[in-house]
Length: 576
Image (cartoon, rainbow, N blue to C red):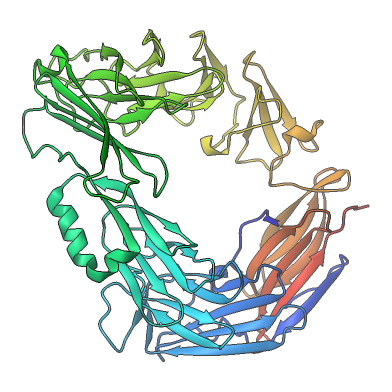
C-alpha cells in the first residue's frame, strides 16, 4: 500500500456534503475530537489506521481532567469496538502522532507524555494493548519528543529514540524500562534478539565507563564499543589528528582509526565482532608524512569519507592534507595538500561547511572538496588522485544538486531567474535563464524517466512546469495536460488514461468563517467534482493498492450535529 497525499487538518464551517462519486461513510460513535480536547488545535496525527484499514484508532486528551482517552472503531460500521482511559496524564507537546504497531496488536502514541502522579524526567509512552484492553505507560524516554519507534518481532519490547538523541528500550507489557540511554549517540535495534547495538565507537575511556555504570544491569540489553585507541586529549597544537570510522553492520562492526602526532600517522583496523574488549587488531600501519607536522594552519574539524565501493578511505588532517588509504590493507594510496585560501597561509584552506568531502558516484567516481574564496570545487580521482578544478561564478551558491554528471547551482538571489548547469566530467558550464515570473523550490526538482531532463515546478501556477534537458541546456515550458507520462509527478493520480489532482479549496462564508471543500480535479478538462465539504477535515489520504481500485479516505467533523464521519471514496480506474 502506498499513500500519496499528506494528511490534512483544516477548519471549515458547513455540514458534510454529498457528491456523485461512489462513497461509503460511517459515523464514529462518540468520536467528538473537537469538544473532548482543551486545545483549539485538532490534528490529523490524533488518528491512525490499522494495516488493513478496517480499524480506526483515535486519541483524545483533556488537560483539565489530566486524562488521555483512546478509542478503537470499526471503519466499515463506525461502531466503537473498545476504549481505554489513561489517568494522571500530561501531554507537554501537541506534536504527537498516533500509530499501530506493525502487527496491529498495539496502539501507541509518540510525543512528550508524562505522568502527573510521579516525577518523570524522561517522560513515558502509552502502549494500548488491544488484546487485553490495557494501557501500559511505559517509561521510555520522550524528552524533546519521540522521533522513531521500533518493535520486537513479538511486539513485547519497543525501542524509541528522541529528537535530542535519547534512546530507550522498554516493555510494552508492563511499566518497565530495559535500558535508558542518555545523549550518547545512535543505536541499531535487533527485533529478533531485542538487543541494541551502538552505531559508534566511544573514543573517550571515561565516557565509556560512565555509560557502562549508568546502564548497570541493563548493559546486558546493549552492546557498546570502546575504542582500543583513545582520542587525543585537548591540545591547541592543530597538527594532532584523530579520525575514527565505523564500518560494517551490527554486530559485525569494524573500526578504522587514524591518529597523528607531529608528522607520525598511525592507521589501525579493529574487529569489534569478537566477544572481547579490547577488540581484535587486524593491522596497524605507521607513516611519516612531513606535511602533517608543518605550520599551524587549522580548521575547526576534519572529515572522513568512504569511496562508493567502500574500499578506500579519505580524510583531511587538521593541517589541510587530503589522505586516501586502502581500507583492507591500510596502505597509503595518495596524498594532496589542499589549496591555501587567497587570504593567506594562516587561513582555512577550504570552506567550513559540514559537507567538506562529497562523494560522486555513477557514471564516474570523484572526491570533491569545496572552497569559498574563490568559489571552487576541487575534484579528485579516487584511484589516482588526479586533480581538477571547477570555478563557480560568485552569483551562484556553492551548494548544488547532482544529477549524474550534471551539477545544478541556484542563483544567490532568488529572483535572479537563472540556474548554472555544470558538467562535472568535462567542466562545461552554462547559464540557464528562466522565463519571467517563473519561481521554483530547489527541493522540488526531480528526474523524469530518461534521466536527461530535470523538471522544475512553478510554485505560483498550478500544473505549470519547465522540462530542462541537462545535456543541451535547453528547456520547454509546459502546462498540463502534459504530452508525456514522464512529466507527471506523485502529485497526480492516474485513473485509466487520465490524470487528476486532489485539491482543497477554501472560500469565505457569510458569517466570516472559512469553508473548504475537497475536489477531484481533471487536468485535461479543468473540471472538478466535489468530494467533501465539512466543518473540520481531520484526515484526508489517497490509498492505492496494487491491482485494486484507488480510494480516498477522509475523517470529517460536523459542528452542528457533533458527529465525526469516516468516508471511503471509490475513485475507480476509469473516469468519463
